[in-house]
Length: 521
Image (cartoon, rainbow, N blue to C red; front, side, top):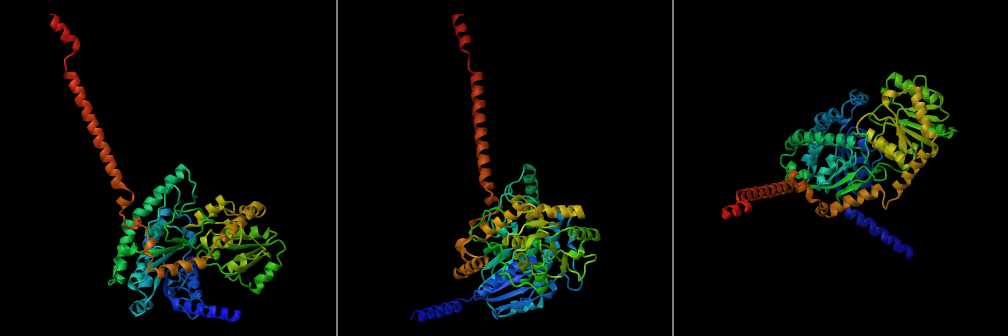
């Protein structure tokens, strides 16, 4: 009887899940894997929960189940046709130049590639329907039109965590005194000068974003979604949910609106068995292993020869073995304790107990995976949010960063030893891992719950903040402060007039002494 009851419950659960299965569209425009992996992690979680998922993007999930469909846009891949950029060139670019490139070239270029693609046009002209549309929030506002087109709730995910672009969608505040700009190597404890620089950069960013970038996105939106029910401005105020690639245990607390949800680590799956050659290399590493990768966008092969040789010489002096993700098939003068491969299963490697250190560019994806497994960091930040991430590591005590311009054999070797020979750094990384794992639901479970919540409640307007409906003047109380200043000015003016009149009256009145003298005369 007990077995029959269990079987009955199982059948009911399967039937409920099938009946509840939603159709969800994911728009993942980024060419770089570090951004795409976040979106794919979200879509995989929804597919595993039984929903029918369609993904528009540059990559394809090879082991996808039948309810996961990918519309592959090969034109989004950077190195298609040999056009791969060398991102090391951006290391010395001023912050405003990087923002200019994002706002004028990278973001609009990716969005236009998606919206003008024949496969996407076929999708837009089809009779398909979706219960929710999920779009990456990374200079891609024109793509929010997919939600309006399919009359579905808009859900976005932010690969940078709580960015200005994401916060504005749901009315989340981000005080400049506390929240450092993405491109600055500051923490939530800033000095006076840091707060000054942070405020100037935030305001410059916001001014260009609102006055030059968004109008261009609106033009693109109107061009590709001419018949949608919502205007661009209405669409920007109609976001149901923001999923953040962030967790407070990895950074610092942020103020959030109710419909901003942290799902940091969504891309991390259960560790898989390592390839035989990597497993043998790790097993034969008596003193442990260092894993070295500059991520998916930066390429180790693009290091200048003197920088590459500095790493080679420094590694040759180590007692530890080194796994180096290096995108060429061979490495000149490779030491015996180094294994190079064009691709490595990063999460599976970082999960191995013999891996003692992760040398990284400081990207949020790799940093999150390292901390998930309690591995300390040695960062070589180049651009974007990498300096910010390594500033957090330095403040949190679970890693240090080194300057690209100073890279030489001795500097690299001493920095590696500074981490490996200091037990407290590894202990801090393991403490962060314990905090990161201590939560009621996994990132995948959290994602599924909130996406389903939005679908169940038809956009969940009850989560929305009234802040998105307020103008700049209203939100910042400039009208109220203006009235206060005007009232105070009127009061001061009134008091001033009264005082002047009283002084004039007193000055004109006869003096008592003179009056008595006249009478006696």
